[in-house]
Image 1 (cartoon, helix red, strand yellow):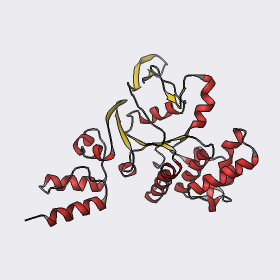
Image 2 (cartoon, rainbow, N blue to C red; image 1 turned 120 degrees about the vertical axis):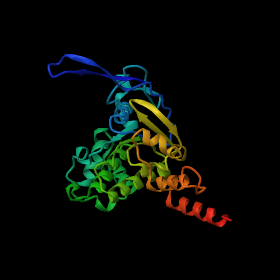
Image 3 (cartoon, helix red, strand yellow; image 1 turned 45 degrees about the horizontal axis):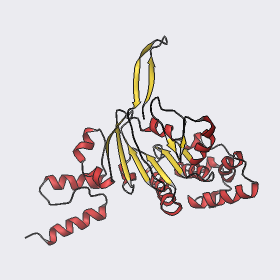
Length: 279
């Protein structure tokens, strides 16, 4: 897939063409948790908008559950199959009460009233926000608002949710709340998740990781395979989880730790093993 946009000067004259997505080829299967990483301007958000048919590729095709995003007759169905959650929850929340906001999408789809309320209940429970169903969204924290946004997408019963840096505007507690809810949707509900983020700790439980740079796929693999390449990630201007970086520095100092340590528990166990077998 290729996506190009035209650069113009202040007077509207064409300056050139930039490839925001350059020959990207992804195969995402039902139920997978996919993470897409990249520094600002790498093309990851542009890629996300193609999956929901907000943008169309200049070359190539994007297929969602057997439907081509370029086919206008399937546009409505594609946007039901692949729901989008954006950075700022305030841009998606339009209701004055949480449960009304979550029910807005199914109502627009023509879902019967009784079923709408069933979907609202199940969606809010899925993200741990049912007890706030009568609240005004304005009284919620950033993390709670984002979970309401996710519930609004779930209520439309999509097969896939694309989250475009959903925790970028949240504090650490809010980020943990949202990531916990997303993982539960993937593990329990079997919803396909594409998480676009620049917070490395959020993707250690993903099935696959794709790292983008200059519109291309620069790296791909499991989280452990990706985080085993600390120096390469630094070249791509990306961080790694703090525990992974610490393990990497210990390796460089001569301590025999395995590559790609992802959690504090793994590091603790590895250090205990090294200590146990040290002469």
